[in-house]
Image: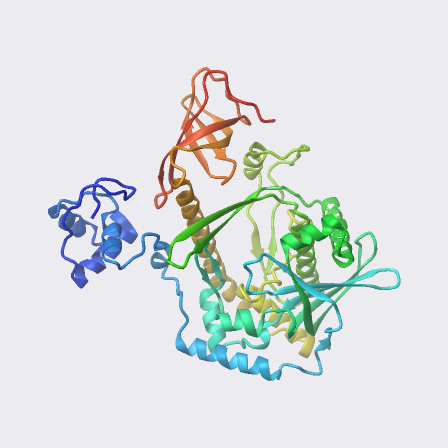
Length: 516
């Protein structure tokens, strides 16, 4: 056992305490909850008797014993998150697969849209495809089909699959692990809009003129046949090289929809993002891939605008027909937001403080960020339970003229799923940060460029350009550094599990390079 460093690097071996089942459970509890553990004092006493004083000793002992991985995701244990599915749920998923393959879901009420050239657009790692797009020319307008996978056809209310999905509430995505809301049989085979296969869908058919004005919408239960599975990278290249007129028409209409939302008050803030992927090799070795992605990428604009349009159209349908729904909204920023021609890290830092948190309600809310008067989430029913619920509401109204759920049902469901969603978002942020810090740990003593966000008498608050990680570094007296400056910093210490990053500025007095 390595006892002298908090980051776990090797030094002096010391004897480990007895590892009886009782001590193992105590060690796990202490590793998960630290001083808040009911067994923390007992474990500290036992470790002290063994001459072990390292702060994360319980965790390191469990790793040494082979019970935990060095990169163990402790949040899963703290939050009691189910990773695997019970046998009863897996059996129900296999039954749904049998139904899908027998095509009992083909009903006279479904509109056959297999003649449309439907395409999916996702990243290369996506295995659950829940939306597709199509476009065709009318006499003096465009018909855009936004086709959403229909798991409500197979996941029936109060069924084994449904109870499990409600319990989970949402899929959870980590860089190194995905925990789906529904078994992969459902998400990747039964419902996924896979290329070359007929699949049931709920389709929002939108008719738009050349300026992107919405002339009409209708929602239908449909059968779709995806002709092409495209990636964001392919779409961006095709748009740049003008090699696909269908994509060009979709993108042009998406841009005009975007401008209409801007005119309606939507706020477009091009916050960059960082995507993290952990690739596992044949020998179990892990390779961390970090991608910084800018906003307003054409392929992302194309997809997001039509998903927004579909969600807005379904919300309007629910309002018009008085269908109980869970709406989403966002109050306007605390102050008006103005942007220059170039969006900087300092702009993003200031603007984040002006944005207000989104809200949910059983009454329509204005979503100021999107510039729409009524909005809900409908387009991800494979991975979000509330989206699945809204599919059932719409399908029931289309078939029977009445919704499946009353207001009280939605209040109960929303309370359950909001807790699951908040927990999932928190765990995803934490785990993503962990792998970014692990990536930075591989760069000890190397330099990175950073933007200064705040200047204090003794320190700067900076954001690393490539990972968007924010941290403090010591100030250099007399260097003349101001917020917005770009400086080089050297990575000196990383504790990934504790989220600690220590950097030092690589500059001398009055040597900071300005970034405007």
